[in-house]
Image (tube, rainbow, N blue to C red; front, side, top):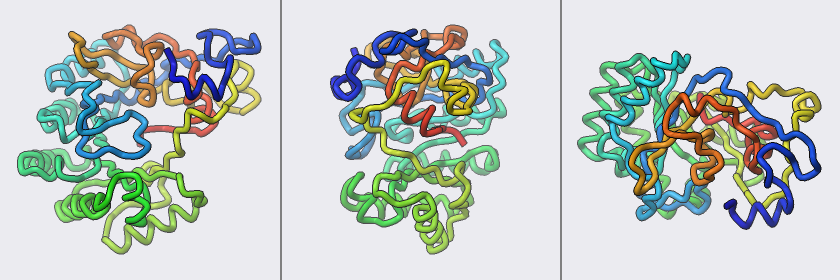
Length: 317
């Protein structure tokens, strides 16, 4: 069952997998170019943010820690299915809470994939074992490994509004350690405070320059600015006719090029989801294998419309 909030905002919409509320054929997306496979490392996090789309926290273990052997199994499946994947992404929760994070990263890097890790760069990453593991990976695979750091806003007070008092300074310390050891970094910010894209990027440019971070504020793959995911806002349903009206191809939507693997609490084995943004929606769980995950995705959720089709979102670099 879908959450009450989007149902109330979009009464009668997003109910039928194949047909919109006004009887038109709902748009669907085929996996035409599988380029990125995401792994959710678990929903546990060292902090609890105000607007976390996945409700990560120190106590939420709805998605449990995935293991390195489970990751290797899916890497084998990529090769068996001949998917043209070039990037493996790790997200959470906080990935460095997972004790096998370094082993999972190494498994992907040794297969020749680029790796993107989404992290808050706080205490879990700064544990001795993780720092030593990262330094080993950096020495062998530096050009293949990027850490994307969550900096909700370049002003400490606004960042801390989302993540808690003192969060900015702790993340900054982690970024400075990464900088000093030559790691490739990107950042993920948010567009919650009403600034224009140009204003936000100018602010991040000043922040990067002040701290000597080699991050391009104008490059949307290095400075990613995410819109707020508000499920209470009414959005239009996407029909097959919308592609021509919007002058957009279904191949541009995230589920044409990516899938995410999660392991639910109590589950015997991981599952593959159509989308990184909908971890708790049963309709978007596609099965346990990549073969099953090759099915089409019907755009039957407000996020599909607002965040992906209309907002042009992408989680990947």
